[in-house]
Amino acid sequence: MNFDFSEDQKFLANEARKFLESQCGMGEVRAVLNDDSKAYNEGVWKKVVEMGWLGTSIPEEHGGLGLGMLEMCVLAEEMGRVLAPVPWASTAYFFTEALKLAGSEAQQAEIFPKIVSGDVIGCYAASEGPGNPDAASLKTTFDGKTISGVKVPVTDGDVATHAVVLAKDGKGASLVLVDLSGKGVSKKVLSTLDPTRSHAELTFDKAPATLLGKSGDGAVLNDELLNRVAVLIAFEQLGGASRCLEMAKDYAMERYAFGRPIGGNQAIKHKLAEMYVKNEVARSNCFYGAWALSTDAAELPEAAAAARVAASEAFWFASKENIQTHGGMGFTWEVDCHLFYRRAKLLAVQAGSPKVWKEKLVRAIETKNAA
Image (tube, rainbow, N blue to C red; front, side):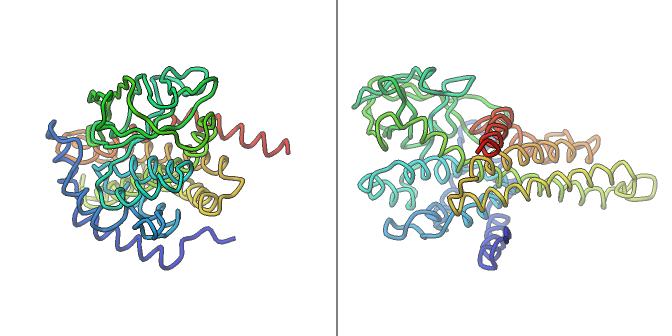
C-alpha cells in the first residue's frame, strides 16, 4: 500500500510553497499580530481566493476545482508552514466539509460558489465553553426555524459571514446554517494566545436558521466532521513543525560560539534529532489519516485520532525546541520563534484537545479489537 502523494500532488505542494513564501511571509503574519484592528490579512486572503484554493474539494459544477481530500492535505501542510493569518481552516475545512456532509443539493448549489468566490467566509460553532458539546450538555437550542444561545469560542466567528452551528433539537442535536449578517446575531471579539487567528463569542437570539441534514443527526454529523477536519489540521501542524525544525537547523549551522557552529554541540544535535523523529512519526500518522480520509475508510476515526495526537505533540515540541535552539534571542519579540509557538498551542485545542483525541484513539482501537 502506497501512502505517498502522487507526482501531481507533489507538484501542487511545490507550487503552493513558492506562492506562499512569496506572498505570505512573516511580515504578513506580523501585520495582523501588531494591528489590533486586523482580524486577518485581507491581502493574503484575496490572493488565496484568486488561486482558487477554497474550491479545491468543491465539485466543478459548483465552481470548484473538483479535486480531492489529498490535495486539501497538501495545501493544509503548506498553509501551516507559513502560519497563514487567514480564515482558511474555518472556511475550507469546517464550513465546507459540514456542507458536503449534511447540506442539501440546493444548499450546496447556493453556498459553494460563494465560498469559491470569497463572498462567503464560514465558521463552525459547536463549543459552549469547556468540555465536549453533546445533546445532553448543549444550551443553544433550535426550534425548527430559529436558534438561541451562546457559542464560545468560535474560530474566525468575528469575520465569518455564515456559520454552521451545533444546537439542541428536541431530545437530540442538529446542525443548522446561520447567516451571521441576519437579525438576532451579535459578535464579541475574544483575545487569545495567537491574535493572528481571530476568535469570537457568538450570541443568537431567535436568529433565523436552516436545518442541515436530518433533525437529530447533529451528534453523528459532528463526530464525522471532526474526524475529517482533524486530518487537515494535523497536516497544518505538520507543516508548522517542519518549518520549526528548518529554522532551528539553519540557526544552529550559522550561529557561532567559541569559534564553531553551535550545531556541532551534542546537546543541539540531540534537540534537532528528537524534533526530526517526532516530525516523522507525525508525518506517518498524517499520511495514514490522509489515506483514510480520501478513501472514506472505516479506519478514519482511528487514523484521524492518531494523526491529531502525533501532530499536536510534534508541533508543540518543535516550536518549543526551536526557541531553545535560538538561545537568549529565541524568546524575543523580534525573532519569529514565538509565532510558531503561539500557533502550536492554538491548533492543539482546535476541534478538541490532545486529551480528547487520545481518548478517541483508545475507543477506536478498543472498538476495532472487539469486532
